[in-house]
Image 1 (cartoon, rainbow, N blue to C red):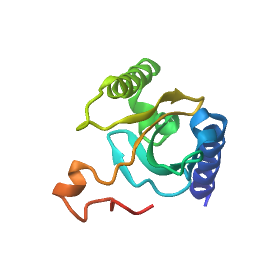
Image 2 (image 1 turned 120 degrees about the vertical axis):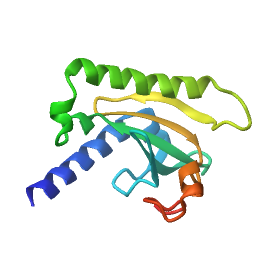
Image 3 (image 1 turned 90 degrees about the vertical axis):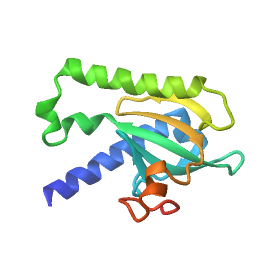
Length: 142
C-alpha cells in the first residue's frame, strides 16, 4: 500500500511540475495516464495544444528515475549528471534537425525541478511497434 501511495504522490508531483512549465501551460497533457510508449529513458504522452487543438507527443524524463529501487545504488551523482547531459543533448540534436523525414520538434527541451520534457509532432508508432506488433505498448492507446 505504501508503494502505491508513494507512486500517487510522485505522479501528483510530476503533474504539478508540468503545470508550472511552459509546456504544461500550452498543452493538455495527462501525465497520470499510462504513456503511449517509451523510447530509451523517455516516456511518451499524447497531448493537445490548447491554442490550435493540434495533437502532439510530449517526451518526459522523470528525474526521480534515479531514486527508484536499484537505480539509487547504480548511479553516482556524477553519473546522474552525465545521463541528464546525454538526454539534453539528444533533445537538442533532434531540435536542430530539419528534414521532412525526421521527427519534427514543436517545443524545445524544457527542464523543471523534477523532469526534462519536449514536444514533437504526433508519434503514432515506433519502429519497434511496427516490427514487433503486440509488443509492450499499443500505439493509439492512451
